[in-house]
Every structure is written in C-alpha cells, then in structure tokens.
Amino acid sequence: MGKNPPSTSPCIHFLDVVTMITKRIVLHFPHRVADQPIVYKLAKDYDLEFNILKAYITPEEGGLLVLELHGESKNYNQGIQYLTGVGVKTQPLSQDVIRNETRCSHCGVCVPLCPAGAFVVEPSTREVHFDDAKCIACGLCVKFCPIRAMEVRF
Amino acid sequence: MAKTIKEINEKITKGEVVVVTAEEITEIVGKEGIKKAAQKVDVVTTGTFGPMCSSGAYFNIGHATPKMKLGGGRAYLNDVPVYTGFAAVDVYIGATALPDDDPRNKVFPGEFKYGGGHVIEDLVAGKDVMLAATAYGTDCYPRKKLETRINIKDLNEAVLFNPRNAYQNYNVAVNLSDKVIYTYMEMLKPNLGNANYCSAGQLSPLLNDPYYKTIGVGTRIFLGGGVGYVVWQGTQHNPSVPRKDNGTPCVPAGALAVLGDLKRMRPEWLLGTSMLGYGTTLTVGIGIPIPVLNEEICQFTAVKDDDIWTQIVDYSEDYPQGKKGSLGEVNYAQLKTGKIVIQGKEVPTGSLSSYPKAVEIANTLKEWIKKGDFLLTDPVAYLPGPETGYTFKPLKEKPNEK
Image 1: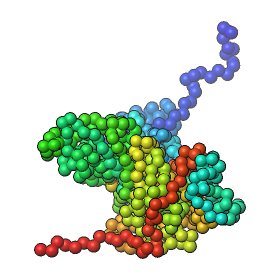
Image 2 (image 1 turned 45 degrees about the vertical axis):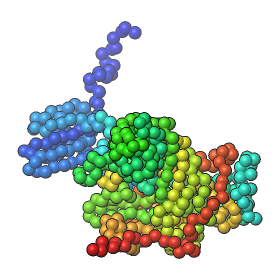
Image 3 (image 1 turned 180 degrees about the horizontal axis):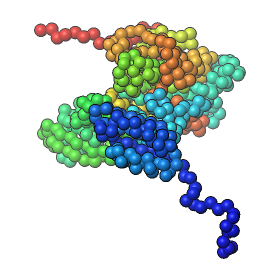
Image 4 (image 1 turned 180 degrees about the vertical axis):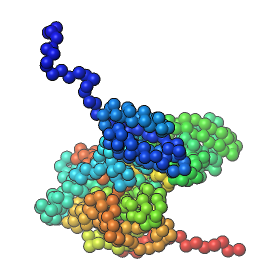
C-alpha cells in the first residue's frame, strides 16, 4: 500500500492494452471514388475484418455501403481517417430495428422474408425468435410485418 | 354412447366437464383409442388467429342535438369512411376501408398504414376516435354537420359482424414470376422465393368439424377475446369440394359469418393489419368448442397437421387470372418444417396465421368452460354440407344490353 511496484515486475500500462472493436458504419461514396478498392485497402492496410451488410454502387454515380468492421481500435480510427481523406463520408449505423414483444403475434410471415435470416421459429412452441445480432437493420420487416410489430429505433 | 349438449352443459355447470384442446385430443386418441377418448372427453376446443378481411363492425352512435340523419349522408371515423346506408345513427365500418387521401399503390408498394381494421382496434382499446359527418338534412333530422370524438363506451351498440371468417383451409401462395408481388398472402418473392400459408391446421375450428356436424347457426364461440356466435355460413362457403378420407377438404371450403359484442372484446385479439402493397384488414381471434357427442365427432377432432392437405397456387398469374390447377399438394406438417419442395426447388415457408396464438385461444376457451363461465349451444340450423351441392361460383359478366 503506497509502495511503488519494483521496476522489474511486469506492469501493464493502460495504454498498451489492445482494444478490439466491432463497428457498423455507413459509407457514402462520391462517384470519383467509387472505382477505387476502398474496402480492400481497409482490410490490407488497416488490418480490419469487414462484412458487407448492404451495398448500392453505381460506378458513374457513386453509392452507399454499410459495413461491419472488426479490428484494433487504433487501426479502426486510422481506417476512418483514410476514408475521410479520400472523400468518403462516414457515419455510424445508428438505427436499430427492435421488436415490440407485446404486439408480435408470432405468426411467422417474417421468417422467409428477412434477408439476414434473423427470424427463426422455435419448433416446440412455434414462437418466432428475433435474433438482433443477425439483424442488418435494413428495415424491410418494419414495412412487411402485417401488425407493425417491428420498429426502427434511432 | 352418444352424449347431448344438454348433458355436457350440466357437467359444465357442476364443474365436472372434461375439456381438452384439439392438440391434446390427438394425443389422447393415440394413447387410449377412439372409444375411450369419446367416452372420457366432453369438449374439444379449437382456435385460430389470422387476417380475416371480411370483417367489420356496426355502431349506433346515439342522437345529436338537434338530430341528424347520417343515413344517405357521409361519415368518417378517424378519416376512414363508414357505410351510412342504414338509419339515422347506425353506421358500419369494414376492415379494408381506407381514408380518401390514402395514396394506396400510387407509390408502389403502398404502406396502407391505417384503415377500418385499425379503427376497430382503436375503439376496442378504449381510444377516442374522431367522427366527422355531413348530411342533407330533413325536417325531422335538420342537422347537416357533426364533428365529435367518440369512445366505445358512449356507443349504444358496438357489434362486430364479420361476413366471412375462419376459412376452412386455405391455399399456399407462391410467385412463379421474376418480380416481387404484393398480395393478401403478404409479399411473395420471385421464382418461388417463399411459400406462404394461412391456417391453424390441426387447431383450426372447421378442420376439426369438417362436415359441420356441430358448428352451425347459433354456436357460441370465443370471438375477439369476448363471446360471439356463428350467425350464418360465411360468404363463399363451399362445402362441395374434394376431401381426404378423414373429411378434411384439400382446398378452401367452408366459412363462418360471426357476430359478437365488441364492447366486451379485447384489442389483443382484434388487430388492425397493414398488408404492404395490398391494403388493410383485421386480424381476428376465434375459438370454437366442439362437443364430443359421439365417436365420429371425436375422430374428426383427432386430426393432425400431417393429415390436412392443401394446394400450392401461383399468385403471379394463375390466381389473378382465375386459372384453375395447382402446383402440387402439401400437408401442414410439411409446411411447418419451414421448407417444402416445389418443382424440384426447396422453398422456405411463412405463416400468416399465428399458431401460438391459436393455442392460447384454445386454452383460454378451455379455461372458460372448465370454470363454468361458458356453456355450449345446440345449433338452431346447420350449415350447408356437401350433400346439399352448395357451392361457390365466380362472377359471370353480362354486359349492359342497350
């Protein structure tokens, strides 16, 4: 208590700890950047694992990508700086889709319609389980759920 | 050893009735055989919870001062038009009615966010709705304009009256075209992207009484969370169809017209529903008790999902163009595995009807009967069965003769 640790003991400094993060971001590409291998560079130069959740690219017009990036936080931050540097606008994917548990009637019409397979029927009760880890927040279910049990939350 | 409804009701009153759901009877028959099951069990409860478009409610709103005749005028509840072809203050709202300024499918697919079905849900939930009405005025009903909030508690009568509910079986809908289509069976993805079905299968009321031997005019039922009655055969009632040996039809067949006091119903059993690209409707909860009067009726209630078959129908071309024919037959056990094979392709299935809610309805009705709160009724008239040759026809267009 109050003693300094001996200089030879292993001592982990807070700033040396490697923080791994997973973030979902929306990238807006102007057309002049659309033909550059942006995602390849994020993976190769910044060692970020990527999962493309949504892509809408038209080479002459630019486009939109929703990516899930996983890697060290300092690499992630540098990756974002790179994107900004080449003219790609980034924003966090801040919208989430949630289910109103009292309203959902567990009909099951969402099961084959969700592009990410986030709805699964539990075989013994026939209730529908919503796996929000699989959800890519595309918002399709918000429109097609007949009793409006799915909501977008910002 | 035949039983009568009178005897069963005596048992209910004494608290001695043996009542099980349509799932439970299947197990009992499997273990103990038909004879024992029919002796032991008095009532089998069934249930279903799905979108039923031919639904609506009529209201008597009470007279304003000075008096006004809505009949022949125009009226809206929360901007949804109601039918005013009755007397001064009687109106009817249908589940699929839409506000005049709803864009419908102008920007396709339309969202149909609010319609008659939603007004009914709001009223049952105890919310105020806005009534706006205009009339042409008469000597005895001079008033021409009215705007007021109304609540279900203020209405003299609020009666759910659904011309067609509880369809006995329904198609499996698929889309053979290469574009998404939007139908009353929900969104159908192109090239057999999904296969949607809509039935409670082994829990479905009319599939447990396929020849309408116990369910008829005057049958008391669970309707929208309250008590209701079967009042007639439903529109498009079609008993004369192909059936399997167990009596169940393999295409849509019978249907029921039902009615009940909306004031005693509950909003969780009457949900305003929006079908993308199609329109609004009402999702209705119905449960019907089947008195086990004899072994034959007991056998009908023991039907299982794998004994109930239906047809796969293409909704991109065949259905809209009235072309007969099916892409094949499947049973409800196959549909519930989540995948069926159509034209050699594995197609994921989706259900519009909620099986867990159907189970809940059958169990709720079982509790009501056990507690002695619900007595069964003898039909005052039976629904037309296949022996009558009653059938449903398409419209034959006859152009106007000059």
